Image (cartoon, rainbow, N blue to C red; front, side):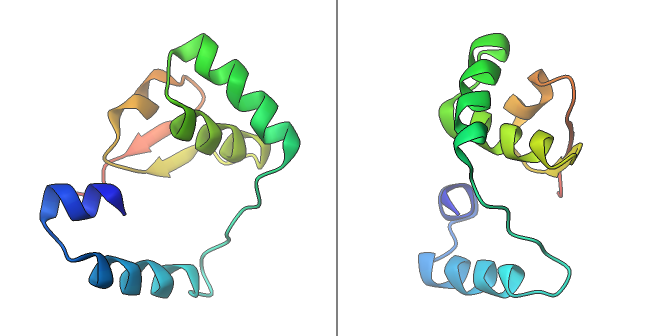
Length: 88
């Protein structure tokens, strides 16, 4: 949400509405963050020099055997086991 508001100058209300629609989609699974994901995120952050949020997202993906992410954030390119796809 932060990127959409800053980079594209979307209003927060509009971004929230769109994100809720995505989350409510039948084709989207929202993953829970487990304690093991948090601990794994520390390892990812240290190994790849990624930030906390990105490391936590990466840990959740990898724990759930997901190898791709749609993101503008090029920090995901540092993580060898994840392929980043820029949606734009």
